[in-house]
Image (cartoon, rainbow, N blue to C red):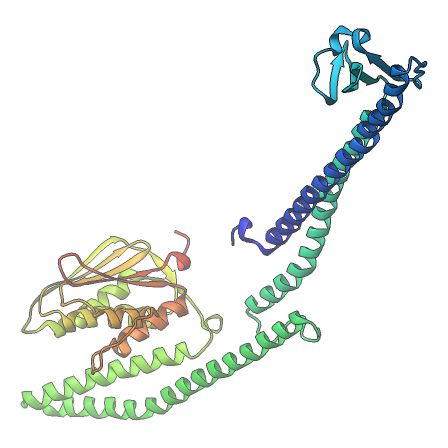
Length: 416
């Protein structure tokens, strides 16, 4: 999982976005309020002073202004304040900010000047406090978001780690919680128990069936060996006995593989096995399938390697791929190649139907043809063996027609 996709990051970012949006909203309200207060405190104050001073000046009465305020009329207006339109203005003269109200009465133009308004300082302090609050709120949201994310993500991570554990006997955490996480944990536990029971039933059934088949197969093999030995000068009977013996032996090997697959991988010894010997033996065993066909069976060793696996499982996987290719190829070439870390079986047959390939690789198709065609037990067995050994089976069509099977043992190589 990418760090950018983590739930922890999503929660923290959501808190920060909420905080940022809240700060912008309340900052805008504060700015409107500050400007409104400025208009009330400064503009209205200057207007009140002008309303008091203008009649007194017209009546030739003394106009005594409070400290910081001055009233100028007509020619007494300072040159730098002349020509201003009516209304309140903020201007800078010699580095000092002045609030100036320009107006007119019956005698002419007048200005009221506020030289020492403290409102600008108050305004700066207010905006500074808003900015500090903005940063503080973002910081608090970051801390709170990380805290909440930790409280939410930690139980989920613990539950995920417990589900991934190989030991199915350990109980899941949070089972006794009464919140939603407890419900999720109990749902996981119920589903895991259900899957475990189903897997155990399948494994026990496979083992029981395989054990039951061993005895009749042993009888068949023994009888076929006796018939073959006593056939003597009867080639037809000897050929039939040989076919029975070969088929029964292959079935017995399949039973052995099923018994191995019915056990957990960690319970099976996995000696170091070289692939070349296994592949060459399976190639030799499959040559009889091409009798009477215009098909050649090639075996090439590019780079030999060894894996930790039982030879019976490797032989079953490779042998089934080779026999499948030989069976469905009517002309051309069946090529078997060892190239570290893969075993590649390539044929020039008709190719594998899409629905068979999808079913073999657990892919979904909208529909499946009805009929007897299928991937058969052989390819399904190869898939199970690959999963058991930690290998990966890939199936690709050839550009010139046919199919390419590859078993990748990258995760199961011995140290060379």
